[in-house]
Amino acid sequence: MQTHRVAGWLFVLGGLTVWACLIVSPSWVHRVIPVVGLLAAGVSAVYSYFVWRTDPDKVPPAQTLPLDDRR
Image 1 (cartoon, rainbow, N blue to C red):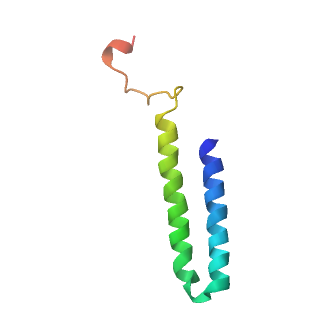
Image 2 (cartoon, rainbow, N blue to C red):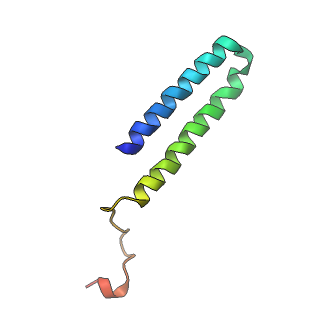
């Protein structure tokens, strides 16, 4: 849920950046769109990882517990 909110705002800001670029210098739009999209997606992915790492309720993947804990 946290990641979706942050990613949503990042993509909204990215869209506003593209609109601003359209107004200021339309010839740069084809360069700005991929950068904005990759930047928003990359920051979202990194943020998601950190949210997952600090989640106290996370469950380890199947078959990864130490042998003593598998009983």
